[in-house]
Amino acid sequence: MSRSAGTGTLTGTGTLTKLALRRDRILIVIWLYVLVALVAASVYGFRKLYPTAAGLEEFIASAGRNPSLLAIYGPLFGHTLGTLTAWRDAVFCSLGISLMSIFIVVRHTRADEESGRLELVGSAPVGRHAALVAGLVTACAAEVGIGALMAVVAIVLGLPAAGSFALAGGIVGCGLVFVGVAAVTAQAAQTARSARGLAIGVLGVAFLLRAIGDSAGASGPRWLTWLSPIGWAELNRAFGSAGCAAALPRVFLPLCPAESIRWWLVPLALVVAAVLGTGAALLAARRDYDSGLLPQRPGPGRGRAGLRSPFALAWRLQRATVLAWCGGALIWGAGVGSAAKGITGLLGSKQVKKIVAEMGGQANLTDAYLAAILSLSALVAAGFAVSAVLRLRSEETEDRADPVLATRTGRVAWGLSHLLIAIAGTVAILAIAGLGTGLGYGLRSGGGGSDVGRMVLAGLAQAPAVLVIGGLAAALFGLAPKASSAVSWSALGVAVLLVLLGPTLQLSHWVLDVSPFSHVPKLPGGTVSATPLVALVVIALALCAAGLAGLRRRDIG
Image (cartoon, rainbow, N blue to C red; front, side):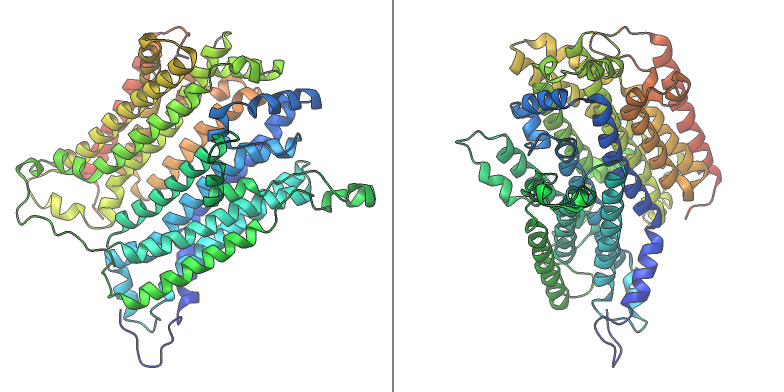
């Protein structure tokens, strides 16, 4: 991208930032809604589940001895509602805000460069680093806004101000580190997909380092947690004991800094993020436009015979994503399945037992826990289904659908190929999640292959509900393509809130029945009725058919 004479390297950054914020306004609002709602739900839910200090301490003591829970959530630093909230949310909010940052930065740097938008922008008086800085500023602004609202909501719900800001600061700090990581991978890779893949791979390594370090015993490699930015978000020890409480009037206690909070971890994250951002700017200055630092392997001169069908092409485009989701489902299932042994001891509160039983649909707490876990796995699989279906929209908007449709391939065949990948991938992810859950539970409890078999079937029983969410995305893509992304993800967000908060808030069954996940059997241990499963499958197929019919008639692009 050339620069006009007299144009500074940051010229036009403000205008590009405004444009980036406008383009990402829906995405940012969705992430804000999800992350802030997660913190609010945790505070409200834990206060309702553990109304007494004795019940809270009993749960914390039990959770702190469970290696599986330590690997998933991390250690507990204290015996208060705030420490329990930080334990529940620090890791997963850090993952969420980091993913948001990766998507934003790559979209406004490598993706725009790959699509040719930056070449068009570069014809105006715009500096070489303007697009990169605009992407960084957009991601940072979104993170700071989410973190501020997260802290305010926690304070309004009764948590101490110091701990609330420490929790939000740790989460935002982790996200800022991955803003820098995404900026570097956007310079290193030659395609947006590779840049996102590299950044998400670094995020996965950071999570694994934290999980290994947190679950290691006293003689294990606990230092690995310190190598992970996600670990820094939990190691800042938000909501520690108030060291100055005895020296201040009661009215000032919410402002009292906690004695055990490691505030210096937030500046550490800022320093690392600044170093990565500076490195990305230096790399951007050294490379040519539309090229990456990593060598790009050229493809063969002739395509393989297997790529002559639209389904084969769709599989080639989505196979890496499908395999990554399947691998993650196996690891997730094994982790949460191994925590099922002794779950009765963790659920000391009668209210907690009641809610878990309601989520699992049965009185046996172990089976209820496993059923609830597989319901959560289905929500995760629904995220894959939506993203796989909406790949059609990205192929269309980025002009990659036109060359395919210029051949003998029809619109319906093109759309159906991606829908089949979404359906097959969803079924595979649910089956593998059940497989991992069965393996994890069976190894810890000493069970045999019967546990694996029934967990796989329990996972597959969630497929009709997930396919309804995917079918809704397909219908929107065909009938209302511009609204397909926002409405599809919003529908999934509503379903997530109903599954997670419905039993806690004791919502009416008329409200809960809006979610398709309320109509699938609660397995293992629950009763199976074919009628709702068949009805959900018919609804999913009807939605897909409506989407394909709309795609056949509307304009492309």
